[in-house]
Image (cartoon, rainbow, N blue to C red; front, side, top):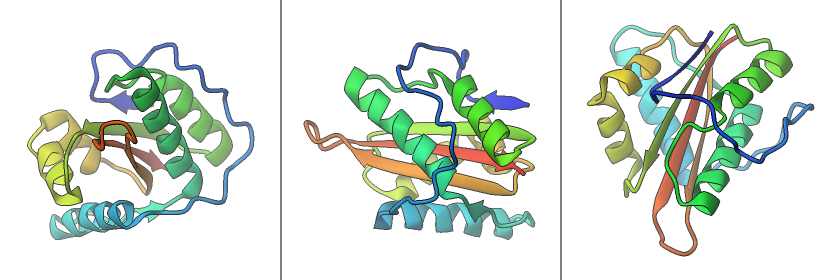
Length: 151
């Protein structure tokens, strides 16, 4: 089962389907902070904390790079990312949140929680997640992709 908060989850992203599980991902402080904030929120409302998976964060990073290169904020090719995570990690369902131009992890989380579709993903029946926060070197603005998976 795929879910995202966009009207369409299809697009023409030119990334190839990674056929191997990516095990190395270096998290920046903002990514670690946002993951902790999401888990703190989930636990505060009686949900399980999510475990991070480097492969999912890598897929998030690929999408951030796509959005920066194309100057867009969207869920293009979410189905490809979701299918990849299902195939390689055995996920049963996958959801995705994206955000743009929030200066802090706390501000991005607040915006997601104020949006019913994004909040639904954060509060979803998931076990794992990944995240990437990438700064556009030309504008200094941050792009956020957060993918959730039930494995």
